Amino acid sequence: MKILLSNDDGYRAEGLRALDEALTPLADITVVAPDRNRSGASNSLTLDVPLRVMPFGERRFLVVNGTPTDCVHLAVSGLFEGEDDHDMVVSGINDGPNLGDDVIYSGTVAAAVEGRFLGLPAMAVSLVIQPDSGVHYETAARVAAELVMRIQRSPLHQATILNVNVPDVPYDQLRGYQATRLGFRHRSDPIVKMADPRGRPVYWVGPAGGSQDAGPGTDFHAVANNYVSVTPLQIDLTRHSMLDDMRNWLQGRPE
Picture 1 (tube, one colour):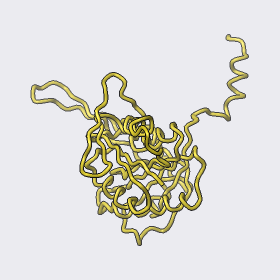
Picture 2 (cartoon, rainbow, N blue to C red):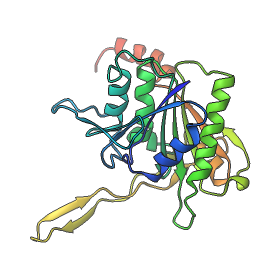
Picture 3 (cartoon, helix red, strand yellow):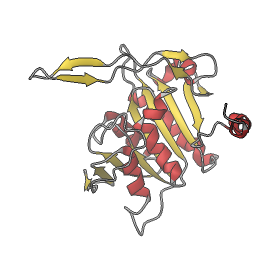
Picture 4 (cartoon, rainbow, N blue to C red):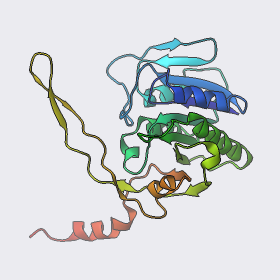
């Protein structure tokens, strides 16, 4: 099995290193990661400037001056021409949660989505770090390895994207796995206005809002109760339940 690893926290991120170490015994690993933190990059592709790929270390570890989506797109679409294709994309381990609405903005999830766009099963793994938690990357790495082994034994459909959120606790404190749906957050906090050294205004995007839809069955609820949340995602954003209403609305006469 050949697995492509990427992330959005940059090639030096501790989570990526932990993921690499955990999966190396299970598969032939290639790492293609951004040259710096690209959190919040979503599914953006770099189209206005050329991308550069540089080796890092002695293994199959490459660094790209682009987004997580760029990294996966390059790796699957010709960067390794003449070699066997990868079998799966795993993205992470993200330094923080990707719960609910977070998946819209997440570069971690976007790397997995790009793998799916290009025909591969994919998984995004995030560690739900809290202000007072201990940053247990080894827990999330072990969870990722267990899920990869499960996929090796019982492959998922090629169209599958798994969004995995792991509580930031020691592994023996996990209560198991739960299949979940995405919850959603309250609106984000207001922007933060500051001044640069010359007195000119600058702005920071405010922190993400707290959980709003976080009841049983959601990813928020699972993680809050020390379960690993595994949410199957799809790319089709069509609101299928509204199609009949939309047809009727379009057929009506304007007032």
